[in-house]
Image (cartoon, rainbow, N blue to C red; front, side, top):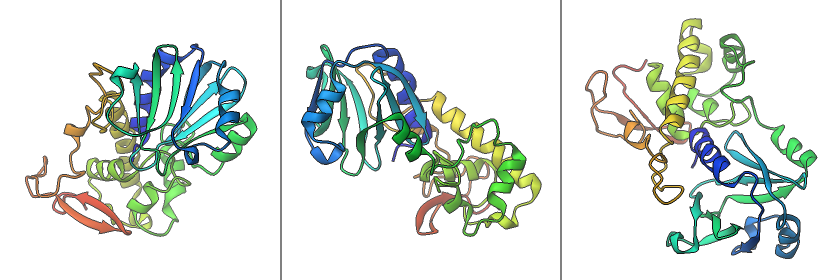
Length: 269
């Protein structure tokens, strides 16, 4: 599932390509991927332009010049692609938004969605989310206060969108690795110094992953040199059996809080 770095990468790359451009057409391949009748969706979207693209957690918010907002959540298996019709990947497209001869293809929206909302509805939907990891108010002290009394493991709390918004399976493991903490640790057992390391690691990992385009392998547009660049830089995620870059011991896959998790049991504590 795309996480904060993947969605931030999409936001950055798309902002320079579609911001200010008028939407000239909409094709709906799967009605369940949107939240209104296709005819109504087209009427409300075609003729408007994308004013700005915002990211909130794992969502992209396309703010239109009409004032309404297209809210995208890719969920598991969802990806974006931008290009001409002849560039379209050999994948089923659930929604296509056209900007003249170029198109934004929404692919794999079997669980994901592209919903049209008013600003008020959008704000209400986002209220359930916890703070962004880069929120200036999320200091080390606020971070510790938010986590320390919570039940469960670090893994389950880091991926809980009501606790912190935007982290999922991949980056929770990467963050714990850099912080030298086991994902199965309980928040109440961490020292103040361990919380400081976890907070620092969270921001370092997410910043690095965004800089390298996240871990999703499919390019966003023809010739895209960035998207997916972090995939080869993952230290533990999906690296079962590979040597730990710190100590050389094999990376282990476990089930932590019913979620797959990867760690080094030798140098994570």
